[in-house]
Image 1 (cartoon, rainbow, N blue to C red):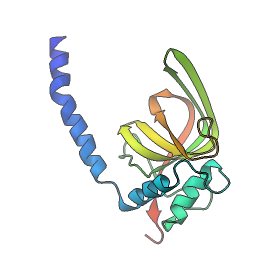
Image 2: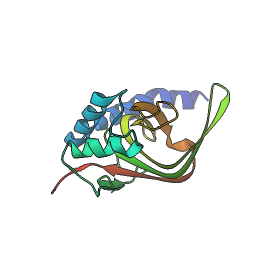
Image 3: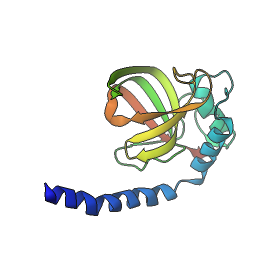
Image 4: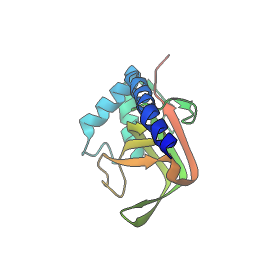
Length: 163
């Protein structure tokens, strides 16, 4: 037990510092996406549909996307670094977690969100609208990938047009 505690004490700061260093290298376009989200936080973007937020963030920053649900270059969150400004497309996703001794079940049949903050690998604060939390206004909530029970999450890295 003493060894495990010592290991965590010595190596946890190294892991956290590596993660913090990697998050300093956020792509410029991703920073612009997050700046747009900050500018509309608490307001309704377009019709208030979830994908309107991502569409406006990409269009206003001359990013390349298909006009539907492919928001840039697909990345794998298990292999690639996820940055604020990356976009997540949910399809038939069910999430189950416990908070304050209450079990929560959420279902997102078709939803779009923007990574707002990377708390740690696999745990993100996401910005989105058209949710039970904020209605049709832009707000944030936590997404912990370990709580995803089923469905598909596709992560996209925004890319500049003609890049």
